[in-house]
Amino acid sequence: MASIPATTFAVILSVLFCAAAGTAVDNDLPDYVIQGRVYCDTCRAGFVTNVTEYIAGAKVRLECKHFGTGKLERSICEVVLVESPRKDCDQVQADRDRAGVLLTRNVGISDNLRPANPLGYLKDVPLPICASLLKQLDSDDDDDQ
Image (cartoon, rainbow, N blue to C red; front, side):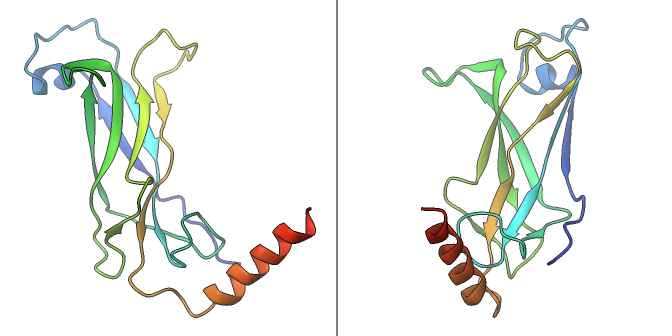
């Protein structure tokens, strides 16, 4: 089984968030740390496996918009994939290209850490072990029924 390194992305937000959004800077706004992982789906399985590799140095951006109007809003945000440093794993994985985060104090979380779901890229060619791994996973699913 492959070991999983603790490679994470962290987006640290402060009053610069408002300045970048073109709004007035409010020094009373809380700071947030958004933490998550970017991975390479080495089997092109559509999910994390025990041979998934995590990508150090992947670029992400934070998008904060109102879902209905597109107007900037500071509490409803998404972390979005921007660029993979790996040329063998730079195809954006559908439905794993963005993760929602809430940047507000009104969600019952007392600290400044906001977790984001993992974001993923697809490897250009699956690893040789993937066929047997996916067959084993499929067989394990059949046993549960």
